[in-house]
Length: 109
Image (cartoon, rainbow, N blue to C red; front, side):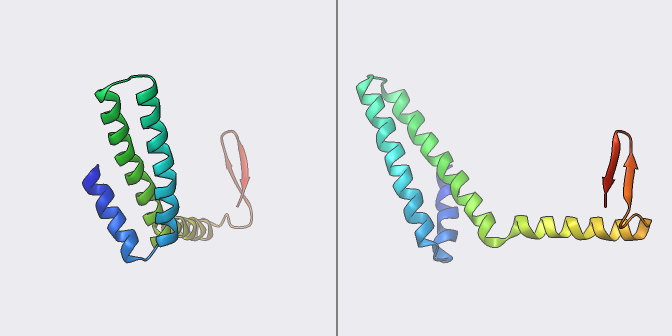
C-alpha cells in the first residue's frame, strides 16, 4: 500500500495539486494522532499501532486514487461515452423521443 500511495502522491505533486494534498495530510494527521492517542489511552499494544499504520496507508491510496481519477476526468469521459452510445442506440432503434417498454414499466427516452 505504501508504494502505491507514494506513486499516486507523486502524480498529484506533478499536477501541482497542493491544496488537496495539504488538506488531505491535515486530515490524516488528525486521524493518525487521534488513533494513536486511543491506543496509548487504552493500552492496546503494538498490534494496534501496526493496524493504524496499515489503515493510514490504505486511506492514502484511496484518497489519492480518487483524486487522480477526478483530475484526469476518466470517470467523466467514460460516462459521456456511455451516454453517447445510448443515444446512438436509441436513434438506431427508433425509440428516441418515445418510451422503452419492458417488463415492469416504461421509461422515457
